[in-house]
Amino acid sequence: MYVLSGQVRLILGDRDFTVKPGEAVEFSTWTPHWFGVVDSPAEAITIFGVHGERLHLHG
Image (cartoon, rainbow, N blue to C red; front, side):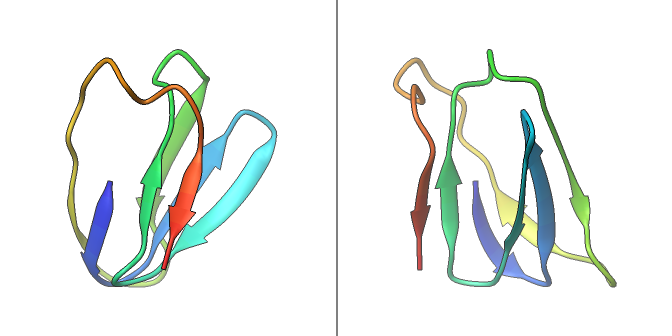
């Protein structure tokens, strides 16, 4: 998921992240997860594929 605007909260297992504009996360969808906006609307691009086996934070 790449955040274009706003902030996205990502709960991944027992870890909690705030993803800001220009940052990206990659993770296995087999890991229990939830995501939503932090304070105001957000725009993000998501791509689902077989290669998301571990979490990466890019910024």
